[in-house]
Image (cartoon, helix red, strand yellow):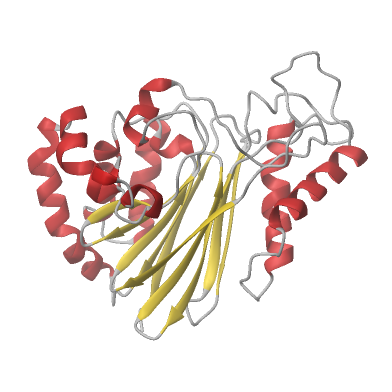
Length: 308
């Protein structure tokens, strides 16, 4: 059985006590559990709600959804039935009790937030991983082949590389707006055999690196060059605080390792490979040699020719 080896997480605010990201996780001693990140959408959620100490809609949305998920999932580690209606009704009710200030802007929304998370279950020698998302917060797996993005961004953009340059519009996210179309919460299942690191992250974690390759190199370097989960958290946080212009939330869970040194040994070969290629990271490198591996867990893309 792939035992749960450890957890690290980051929850960094650019402005103290006003951060619009949130996260939650819960795991049992058997390694079964869940983890989720939420990114309140600051532009669309810029209006305040009466009776909530002047907090903006984005701030309230991410935290409220994290609280709801914990309440619904409890110890069962099961996502609720009809999740779209469940989250929508909850957010709509919050706005009825604590109404948002009236705005003339058509860009403003009621309690908008992304969601990305996983439910993880041990099944003999396998991990059954259910990824859940809406918006552009992501779910990844790092295994012997490196970083793979499982989720599919709800944005108008070609892929994860182009998204960094397109200033893409988000096409789907949680909200409590009765005048809008109901959002979609996506899901994807991965059965994984062997050692791995499962990650959920908001866009503040990846959006300020100039390619998915650099983001992977950052993650693996910080974990590989550390001697403990605490040190890895500190190093990751230092770089993200320096580079990112946004709040950052990230959770990583490690399966199948006996100790931290075994994690370092596991990542060594991938670190060496990326370190050797780091000077040639480019769009052609992405298209010619990296993209197919990066999307190896993404069923929709893997079913198209060339992993477009």
